[in-house]
Image 1 (spheres, rainbow, N blue to C red):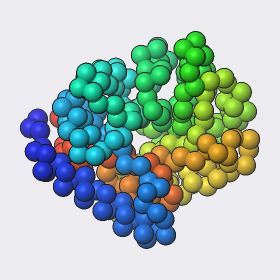
Image 2: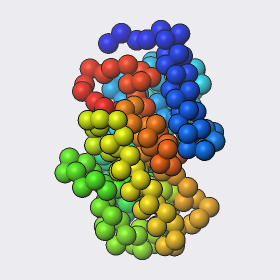
Image 3: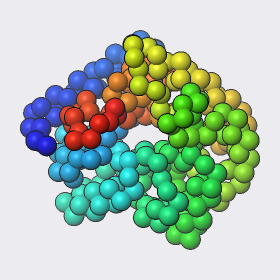
Image 4: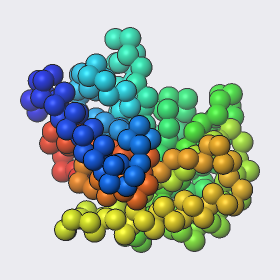
Length: 242
C-alpha cells in the first residue's frame, strides 16, 4: 500500500474534524467532548507515527499483538499516543496488553473482564475498560446483549483493578443514511440506564460509537469516542468498514 503524503493525511484529519464539529453543532454539543481515534490497524507503524505528528494523539488497534508491536516501535521514536484497543480480545492474549492501552473498548464477556482484572491486579495497575454491547442482536457482532450486561453488572463492578467507564458498540453496515442511528440510540438509552445502577458516576462517561461510515449519526446520539480509519488512512489491503 502506498502511504499518503503528510499533506493528504493532514487534510483527511482536518476533514474528519470538521465533520465532527458539524455533527456536534447539530446535536447542540461541544466538539471538544468528542475524542477522534485514528484506527491504524493493518497499516505499518509509519502511518501511525505520521498521524500522531499531525496532531492525532489517540490511535486504535484491533489486535493485541499489533498494538503491542506498534506501541514499541513508536516508543523507540519517543512517541506515546493514547492507544485504544478496539477489537476482539482472546483471554490468552490479555498478558500482552495489560498496562499498555489507554482504554480497552472491547470487553465483551464477564470471563474476559475477570482475566483483565486478574492480570491487572498482578501488575499492580488499574485497567480502564468499556463494555462492548451488541444491542442489534446481529450474530456477526461480539458483545453483551442488553440482558446479559445488566445481569453481569454486579459481578463486573466487584472485580478489582478495573475502572468500568462506559459502553462500546458497532452498528451493522448501513445500506442507507441514518440506519445506524437506531442502534446508537438504543446504546445511549442502555448507557443511561446503567448510570443509575451502581457505577461510579465520575468515571462512567464514555460511549464509543461510530466509524468512518456512521460516526456523524453516532455523535448526534451521544458518542464521546469515534473510531475512524479509512477516512484518515485510506483503504486497507483487507476489507474493513472502520
